[in-house]
Image (cartoon, rainbow, N blue to C red; front, side, top):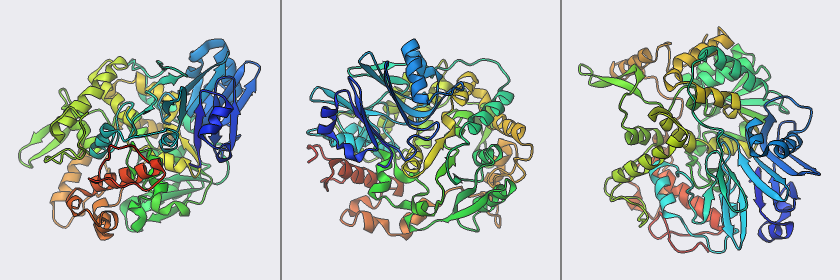
Length: 565
């Protein structure tokens, strides 16, 4: 990858046995750890930095800055704070990062509280190694084998849960935790603590601060834009954005409204026309999934070369933190239209597995599990769904005091759309606004019934009263309920166009480009599966080939249980 961190709890000699230093921008060694980093933004303010002093070594990789201003580089500041306060120092670090600190010959690795960067690790030959690229880690193991549970979760849900990856012996660093040479230690930076305060006013203030502190990145600034709330927020709060990019066609309502909003704030607009490469799943795209999430979320993949800027902004994950994407709302069944209608209150008794099945794109495939795996404690996909979601939902109660916050936490841990930013970060200086600690604190302190569209829209109007001069095409009303009613009527009444979605029709693109024959010419038995499942199969196959660094064939098209070559 063009942006990567890889390290070992050991000396430089041990590092060289596993990876070539020539593949990194910098390789630094301490007394007990050696780490290689690659980042085009190395040395830029608030980006990847290295500091070595009398008290030890510090590497901060990604986007990071202290929560209070300082004249010192972030890596130097963090090392000094760690010497004084130990792991509590990480509570004062803001951004989207992986940080490594070595002091008194002991090293520790920590991700940001949102876990917006995954850190993976593996143990072999008495040396623990860690990094951001699972495929690179897999190639350091003597006999890596496929993890059938990880593959089964990925093919059914489009992601893996908990510490699971697609390779046995490689784990993900747990959410809000620290990695050492021989342990994983839980931290407590992300714990729900609902309280009463001025939710709207405080959110507006924190949004402006979060965006402002990320406004000084280098070069021409671009934004991947929809016609929704998050994009217009960034434009309103960040006048430095030069150009906005929207995926679609000139006639797409999403593009038409996005163009008006960009003009409203003085930014140029460029339409990324959907083409046959929208569902391209070559190795450069699938690499960003790390084998644990699906590449379908990399929406810009077919138009990356058209993005002409050095720094890229996006609103990924703001809806999850601020608008309660994983908080279920109650509904009432209207017999005269035979439809569920949303109510302005939380669901008092949500069906948690079914709720997440819809959010994650679960496909039951009632005949069989897609992977024959003896480690799966289920006889059919529905039981697999129930067992998997219930197990990981329950684990959230160590940080959440209610079912709604436990559900939010599960959605936050999974972050199914993360390949979108990983792919961007490998090509541009990318900023992850949602990882700001002020926004995380607002999320943790705001009761779930107040994390909704109404609160968010009121906060945006405080930032700019004209922010909804051009409303999103699929949300013409301020009321969520009215939007849903019009959405239903548009689908039913003749002669009136439906709202549509911000994203292209994936099933149509799949069929028009004859991807069954291009991806699975010798597997007609797969052709009847839903296109999204077939794309997951291709992701898994492509990524596992990449992890093995050779071409591998799987007899049943899904998984092989023998060691990777």
